[in-house]
Image 1 (tube, rainbow over the protein chains, first blue to last red):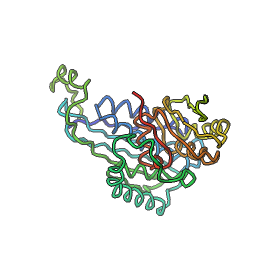
Image 2: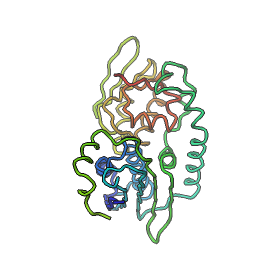
Image 3: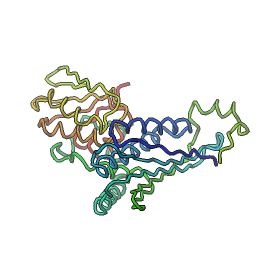
Length: 199
Length: 102
């Protein structure tokens, strides 16, 4: 199965993160990843890079954040399960272990408790005019980033590698039941023989 | 960041005219919302123009609503990606997320 492989580097400035997010989004759209996966992967990338800039580098300019991406292609139109891997590296302070563990535990609890709660909500917006369960004043204003990464990704790793920190994120994209509308004519026109020979 | 307000039926609608609510604009969002939210009247935050929101954008939004003391809050026009973030963080349990308009 072919894969897109790419390395992208940006300066440690929050204003640069969106360009990275938009570049990866464009790539995943080109590979016909489903839109909800594209959106959640873009979100995780942005969260991981924001973390590197805000915490590892304490928003100090003049450093670099490196992103390595590997995104499996759909093998010329036969859309099966595909794997996406992202690694975000910085040379700043490491995220403390207890913070990583807390995010992991919260995301796990969310995944386990999520089904019953989602079921009670019915269709999207179906109970929009009903009563709300919690008060706004009890909401946290931060700390959502790492938890979101754990909620979206199948695997999240973090390690110190020499002078660098590396956050590794992996997600398997489920096989599409049918190709996206615009993918049908393209696949039919190109045919498997027209696929570029990237390994 | 352009933020505009309109008033109907005793509620203020606050429209945030920006495609991305992210860490780069979080402080600007906080300041902008602080200027228009008085905490007394119900508020509808119109996010029709927002295609992407990260946890910093969400934190700024939640922080502004808390700081203003607004009790009755709705979010209108949320696009799918924004809706997902509101759901995953459970902010939709404290803020009414209005159905998408057809």
